[in-house]
Structures are given as structure tokens and as C-alpha cells.
Length: 191
Ligand SMILES: *[C@@H]1O[C@H](CO)[C@@H](O)[C@H](O)[C@H]1NC(C)=O
Image (tube, rainbow, N blue to C red; front, top):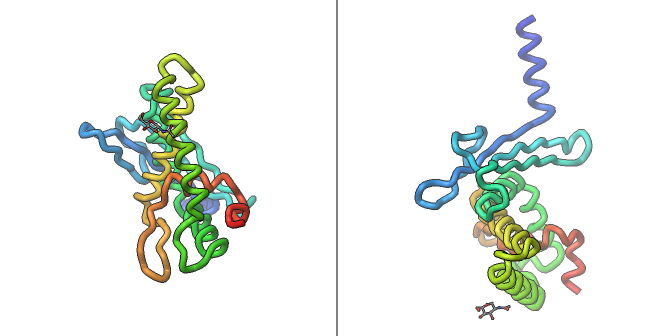
């Protein structure tokens, strides 16, 4: 009976493939990822259920501690977890963009698109910094920008980062890559 139970438990584990990770903010101001546990004093934690084989989707559940609710630190930490835990999917997307939509030799997005988006982000940051203390809208924009920054930082810390197959160089991603995840069909950008 016990053997059967263990076998069933293993089967359930294999079917759900739940992964857990958390982030602590260290005394020196750095963010630390803890794989497989919710570490004491975590400011954010996440559970990833890989249900790709059952329904084609992954589900990521992100949580932040009440002590960092509504703060850039909390959003940044949650972003780190998303970038770290979803790194494989992000790599697929970057690979599709860089190798299929452009040329295998070109590791860069079209510069006009990149500089447009970058100056737009800088403008958002400027507006948020100067208005967030009295505007809820611009405060949320500041939180969102922290989340995007954290997502890129988490992605760069993952062992699943994109590796250029020709040069062997590990590509850590940029905030631009993160924004491009929302574009869907990236061929739009190559015309
Ligand atoms: C953002 O602010 C900096 C410093 O005030 C300024 O130099 C820069 O031009 C601003 N950027 C944009 C896109 O508004």
C-alpha cells in the first residue's frame, strides 16, 4: 500500500511539475533568489505550474509580502521571480525573434524600434519620478517599470538564458526584450 501511495505521489508530482521560488532583500541592498523554498523574510514568492502537456499553458502565481505592497521593491522582486521562472519560455521568444524574424547573424533588433521604445521608457520614468508623489497613475507606472527591470534581472540570473549558437555568448536580455514578449508576432517589427 505504501509503495502504491509513493508511486501515486510521484505521479502527481510529475503531472503538475510545480516549482517554487522566493526572493529576499539582503542587508546590502541586493535581491537573492531561493529556489524550491519560501525563505524566511521573503518579500516575494511564486509558484509555477507547468500544465503544458495537459492544456498548453503554464500558470505562474506571484505573491508579494504585505510589507512591500505597492512599493518598487515589491514589484522588482516579483519581476525577478517571473523572469527567473519563465526563463525558458522567454528564451524561446528571444530565439524566435532573433533567429527567425531577423537573420541568424544579427543579434540586434531594428535600431529605430529599439531607440523609439527606449526613449518612450525614459519619458515614462521621468514623468513617474516627478509626478508619482501626488498621482496614483504615475505611481503605478513607476511600479510597472520596476517590475519590467526586475523581470530582465531575473531572466539574466537564470541558467536558461539564451545562448547564441554561433558565438556561444550568453545573452542576458534587455528591458526591450521583455516588452517585446507582449508583441506576439514579432514579424510586425521587421517590416
Ligand atoms: C528625462 O530627464 C532627463 C533629466 O532631466 C533629461 O535629460 C531627458 O531628456 C529626459 N528624457 C525624456 C525622454 O524626456
